[in-house]
Image 1 (cartoon, rainbow, N blue to C red):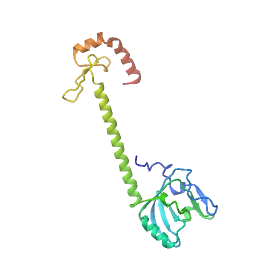
Image 2: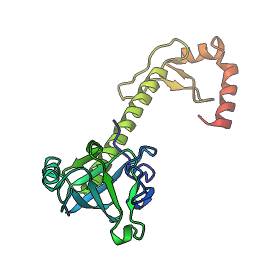
Image 3: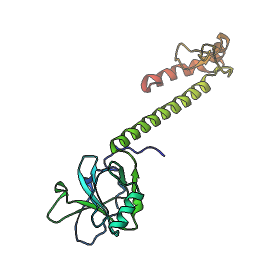
Image 4: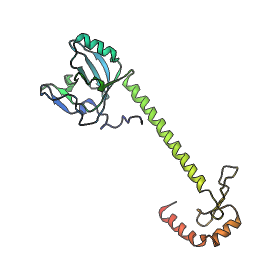
Length: 224
């Protein structure tokens, strides 16, 4: 699986980019209409009556993450079992709606995400700081890009090797110096031959005398 592209703000939005939902309207907090993923870091544990964490998103915006359906003791055990502690990175999937108090907004710290009991599995945890997660994922992406480029170059080399055949006799080239061992037609630069004899044969019997001008015209218009 390819590493995620955290630069894609449509897939990895900030907290304030999530759709807002007024407190008390009875709608579910977690929705699945938009396949987004929110990434944030645990700043503080504010558990009093239910598991409540203060998180900061990628733009350093604070918000509360509240797990519904737990009392204090259950909540403390739950947070510990999931390693939800200060400094950990939290991954929230499946598209989320932020809860906003009717008279407050996220700037005052009143906005929150509330996770209904039974959907805790949608909250994933990485035991490390968010900044480091971003850095390591970027390294993975760079390594994958390099690997892809290497693969493409290898395929190109194989294709080039396959093409390195004498156009008259079909002999595969391969000089000791790493070159094809063939020489190209001085007219079009495309046809290849292993010897002067094959060049003459290709020019006369192989029809290259007529094709050479056609090939040159194609290259002039569209490039090699």
